Amino acid sequence: MFADNTLTPREAVRLCALGTIARGPRRYSDLAASVRHFVTRITGPSLDLLGSSMELLRHEGLVEPMDGEGMEDDALLAITEGGSQEFIRLMTANLRASSDLSRLVTSLKFRFLDLLPEAQRTMQAELILETAETELARLVDLRAACREEGPLMEEWLNQEIVQAEQRLQWLESLASRMATGEAA
Image (cartoon, rainbow, N blue to C red; front, side, top):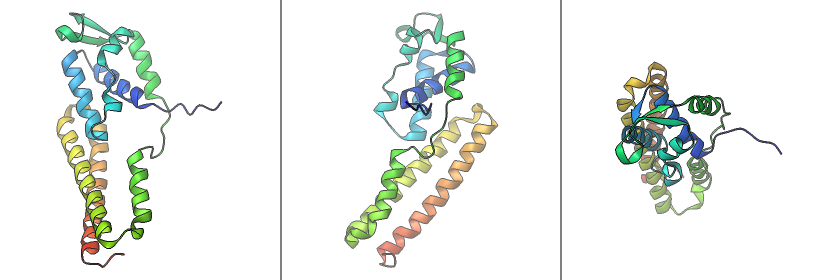
């Protein structure tokens, strides 16, 4: 059987947690908040992604408390040798091109938008516009919070923000044309 060696959502969260703590020990609560903040700014809120516990990393021996026990006493956590090996495994996994389900749904909406009555077309264009505004706001918020993550992270975020701004500008134009009946 063919395995594509790409990360599952759970593994992506593990990569975020292990990479964060690989930069230096973090308190349990700080690690959990940092992972939650980063993941939700990239993907939006998702129980599928945030359902896995940081405590599981400790039970699997990927992180260890330097003081305290874990979540209950907000222990200072450090990455273990096994955690470093898992981090390398996750970092070197393959990427899927455009694996985001929302991209598929958005493309399907555009593909079939002309099949809707005019009022619903306009409403859908506005919905897509609102989604793009939310995505841009998440990215801008993430950039403001990630200054300490290094220049490559900031460069990537800047590029993502430029693309999100361009997409938003195009969607605003489309919504405007649809509202005036110019776009069919």
